[in-house]
Image 1 (cartoon, one colour):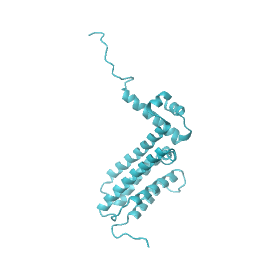
Image 2: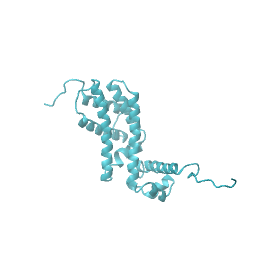
Image 3: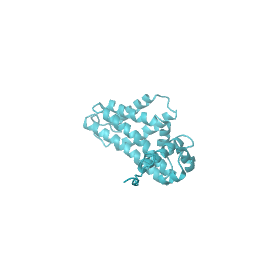
Image 4: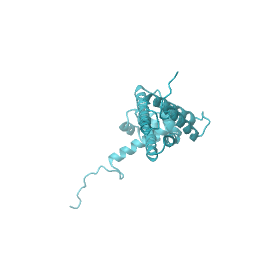
Length: 220
């Protein structure tokens, strides 16, 4: 019938309400990566400053997040998620390679992803520290996920006869601490080496932990 009103579609500017919400969420995280990961840093950023950087209002901020800590938590998980995607893709590409070559491919992918943007390094290794018990729990849980990934790779190496059978979780935890510390220091300019040299050293460290298949040495 002519002149009949159309039912509302919930779309505005060509986007649905869900798409607009996702876009606002992304813009706040993009702004947080810049402000938290560069200047002035998480602790000196205000809701007003973050909203202005995102090109949105403080009202829209509180529609997406309760606090700036919520933004940092989401950003920390996002940055780690990017690195995990890079690692899993590299692991798939390295399927069938010997342990040393496979480890080099995987850790090179992780290092390249994390250090590709200094802001990611700062979010992962600096800004997340000491904020609150909640974020400390998240940081440790995310680190445990990386430990699980290393343990999974090691278990596969043991099954292939490339590493000695052993419970490697404690060693993997220490190794992840070494990875994080070395990459942070390299990014800060405190390590006189190329990124490839850093990755090669990490691979040597991992292989030294695993030992070739056979009797393990015991401390005197």
